[in-house]
Image 1 (tube, rainbow, N blue to C red):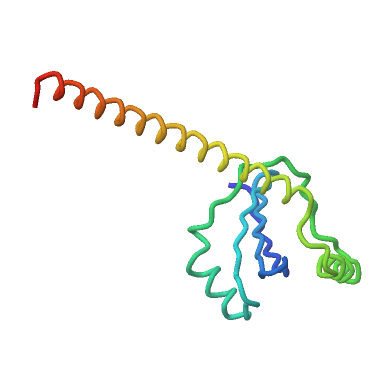
Image 2 (image 1 turned 180 degrees about the vertical axis):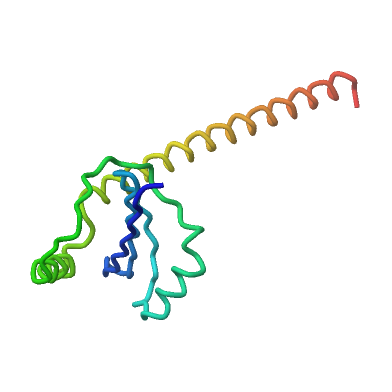
Length: 138
């Protein structure tokens, strides 16, 4: 099994607080988004990670370049400062979320189409039954 790294970014996206989980495994990035609502405390975030992390639906995998941690502690501190400065989520993560959104849209369309067809079939059967009953003179 390869290296797996997970990163959680919590930010304010009008009007809710949102958490984006980024998971890099074998050079592939998958992303899940969770809306917290009100500003979550550290304990709320920890509880969510411990209890509900398994129920997150991650996006399909997107190829990404995996960078190692910098050796120099000052450089590492600067990297952390840049990531915390309010940039939000990365573009790769946004692409993965968009891909997941498009897949969900297609699933909804297919399901809706099947439900419409089933309803039309049911209506047709009702009409045929009524026709038969009228023909029998009931």
